[in-house]
Image (spheres, rainbow, N blue to C red):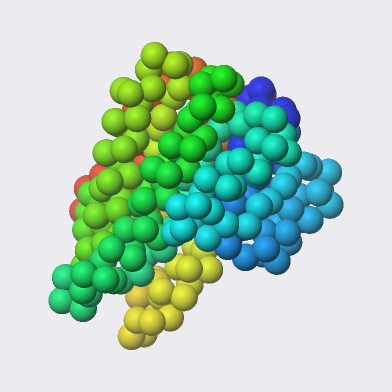
Length: 261
C-alpha cells in the first residue's frame, strides 16, 4: 500500500537504536525523511549513513532529551533546516528498573524525565509546525503500563502517562486535524532488551520462557513490524484513526495465556 509519505519530515526521538532505528529505516524506505534526535552523534549519523547508502534520505540532530532546552532546540533546528515538520514519533526511553523497594525519589524523577517528560516537551514544541502541516503524532508505549512487570515503578508510570497523553492530545488537537495514536510494544528484540536479559539468572532459559508465551508464532515482534504500524499511523491512510493504542505484540498483552500451554 502506498502511504503517501514521500518527503514528509518526521522527527524520531531515539531513532538510532533498536525500535527507533527500525522506525527510521522503514520511514526512509517509504520515502519520508526521518530526522533522528538522540544523544549520540556517532550513532545518529551511522543510521543516517546507512539509510543514504540504501538510496533514502535522513538527517539527525544531537539532543539529550532529559534537558528541556535540547528538546526545544531539536525542533528549532529541524524547522531551520527543512522549513516544516509533518510528524513526530516519541520513542526514546529505557526500562531502567527503578522499583518501589530499590528506588528513591531522585531515581524516580530522573526516570520520568528519561521516559515521559520529553514526550510532552517534544509535542509541545512541535505543535505549531504540526498545525500548519496537519501532521500526526505517534507515541511508542509498553505493555508494562497494563500488565506490570515488577521492580520498574517509574517505567510503568511513564508508560501509563504515555497512554494517557495519547488520548488527551487526541482530544485537545481535534480542532487542528492532528491525529495522535500509540503503538504499544511487548517483547521485541533490541540491544536494550539483550542487555536486560543478560542481567537475569540463566538468561537463555528465561528468553526461551518469554518467547514461548508469545501467542502468535511463538516469536518476538520485530522492530520492522512495529515500524510498519508507526508508518501507517503517520500516513493519511489512517486518516480517521486517532486516540488509539495499537498493540503490535503477537497477542502477548491480551490473549489468554492458556493457549500457550
